[in-house]
Length: 348
Image (cartoon, rainbow, N blue to C red; front, side, top):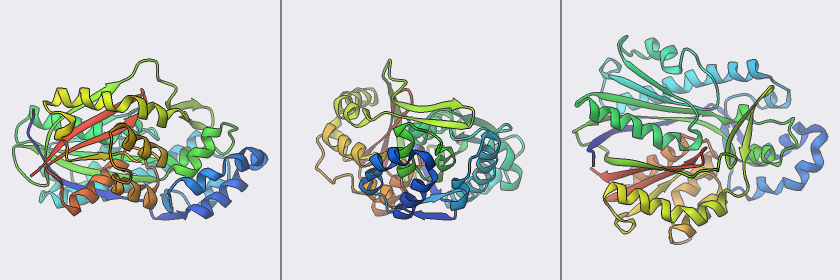
């Protein structure tokens, strides 16, 4: 088991806020000729357990059609702003100056940036010109856990090095209002935008110790979750089978990950899970024999921000750290693949 210190954790959201009931009314108009489809599925807005979400574009932007160029332009502009805000806060919380950061892991799946985001904002942020850069694409909702795990392994490989991990997702600009896929309506009811950043290093003790990570990839499950690449932009793949799949498969996956980490499920004092939706949270509690409502912070984050994909689980961890981290915590997040990413934390 490794011994990496989590020195800081910071989150950021864009300034535009949309209340859930207003989002429902706006979406019904935006779906245009597909109002019958929308009305059949509109109850998801009321049952999602979401009060509001933060989005990168003004409300009226979503009422017009946009292609790849317009969507990605919004992604680049907003992601760079969120990167600077989250990363600056994380570096300051860690008691470091930007030039003390030795490497950056950037995780994002909702847009394309070449040069990558950390290269674009590095000079403005104050990073050194020899900082190591590891941009990661395609992890989806699992990216917060997987990205932090990658940064931790790199910190172990270079003792005393300081690694910054930043994950940013702008899910709202990928919502397809021209689609007749029911998944598009569900995505419109669930997804928001946000970012999170953390600094890790080997050896020292601070907020928490990262003891190791593990992953589970199920074969022949690629159509459960992900994006389809289409001419107007990304189209969400979001199978209704996700909650029952989690309920059926998660316990064994967690037991396998725990075995690799040298512990048993009974050694875990609390799970810290990605709140993909109310039904997903319910499925996790059922699968892991948790008390109903035990994942209260997950529900709070979903209520306040919606599903922001990769950063969301780090919003949960932020609240868990503020109330006092239990002795042993297992973070989990599901993503395209279909995969479950896990990370073991211990209180400092």
